[in-house]
Image (tube, rainbow, N blue to C red; front, side, top):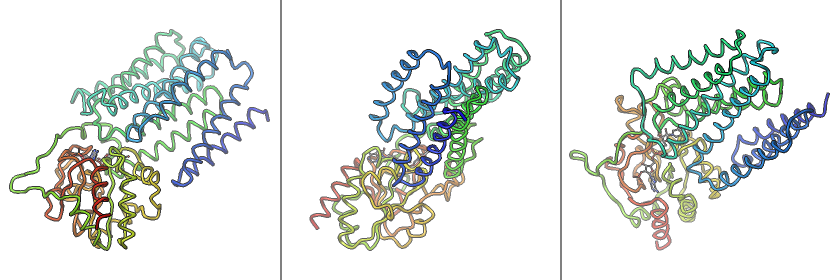
Length: 459
Ligand code: NAP
C-alpha cells in the first residue's frame, strides 16, 4: 500500500468521524473541523501523487481559493447561508466539468481510454455543468440579484429542457462512439449549462433551499463519476458522501414541506403575494403592546416560543434568551417549538438558539411539541409565518396545504411578533392573524422582544 493510499484511508476515517459529529449541535462545530482536516489530508495526499503538475499553478489556485473563500465564509450572515452554500457547491460542480474537459483534451477525446472513462467523464461534465449554472441562478434568486418569482416559458418549458438534455446526451454519445472534435464537448457543456439555468429559473424562491440541496447532491454525483474516470478513490468517496447526504437532506426538506421533488423541480411555487391588510372583510387583526404581552406571559404557567425566519433577520436570539430567563425566574415553563423548515435552511433555528446558549433540552421538535399547544397559555411567535399557517391544515386550495405546521392556534393565546402584515416565504396570507385569540405586536422582532423584557423587569 502506498503512502497516498494510507493517507486517503485516514482522510475517509476523518470524513466519517466528522459527519458523526454533525448529528448534534454540541458536536457539530468539532465535526466540521474534523471533516475539514480530513479534506486537508486528502488534498495533501493527492498532491503527493507523482507527476501532479505545475506546483506554482496549484499553489496560486489554492491561494486564490483561500483568499476568496475564507473571508466570505467568515463574513456571511446566517440568513445568507443558503446562497453561500449554493455558490460553494456550484463551484465544485463547475470544477468537475472543467476537469472533464481537460481530460478530454489531454486524451485526444478519450481515444486511448476505456469506454467507462469516457462515459464517466462526460456524465461528470454534464451533471457538473448543470449544477454550476443551476447553483448560480439559485444564488442570484436568493441574493435578490434575480427576481425570486418563477420565471419560465410555461408549457414550452419541459419540451425545451428535454431538448437540451437530449442534445447534451447526443454530444456525449458521439464522443463515446469515437468522435473527437472538441466542439462536441463544448456543445455538451453549453447545452447542460442552458439546462441548469432553465431548470432553476422557473422554480420559486420558496423552494430554492430544496433545489440547492438537490444541486449539491448532483455535484457530489458528478465528483464521484470524475473520481471513477480518474481512478481517484478520494474523489469517489467524497463525492458519494456529498451525493448521499444531499439526497437524504433533499428528501427530508421536501417531506417537511409536504411537496414531492418532481413537483418542486416542475416549479411555479411561491415568490408571489404582497403585504396583506390588517382588515379582511369583517375581520380585523388585534394589536397588543409590549406591556400587555409581558403581563400575559409573566402570569402564564407555560409559554412556547415559536421562532422563524424573522428572528434570524432581526438577530433576536439573544434577546429571546434574556426574555425566557426572566420568565423562567418567575416559574414559567418556557419551551421552543422547532419546525423542520423554519427559517431558510435545515437546523437554522437550532443554530441561532444554540448561539444564544438556550439549553438544548428546551428545544422541542414539531412532533414532540404539537400536543403541548392545547395546554399552553401563551404561544409567542417570533418572526415565523408559514410554519404556523392553519391554511396548511384546512384550506385545500392553499399552496401550502398538507405541509405539517406547528399548532400554535390551539394555545389559549397567541402573540405574533412581526413588522407588518407581509406574507412569509410561500407568499400566502395567514388566517392565524385574524384569529380572536391572536394579538399582533408589530415591529422588528429584536426591538419588540427587548421591549417585552424591559416590561418584565418592571413587573
Ligand atoms: P416565513 O414564513 O418566511 O415568515 C417570516 C416572517 O418573518 C415574515 O412574514 C416577516 O413578516 C417576518 N420578519 C421578517 N423580518 C423580520 C424582523 N426583522 N422582525 C420581525 N419579523 C420579521 O418564515 P418561517 O415561518 O420560518 O417559514 C419558513 C419558510 O421558508 C417556509 O415557507 C419554508 O417552507 C421555507 N423554506 C425553509 C427551508 C428551511 O430549510 N428552513 C427550506 C426551504 C424552504 P414582516 O415582513 O411583516 O415582518
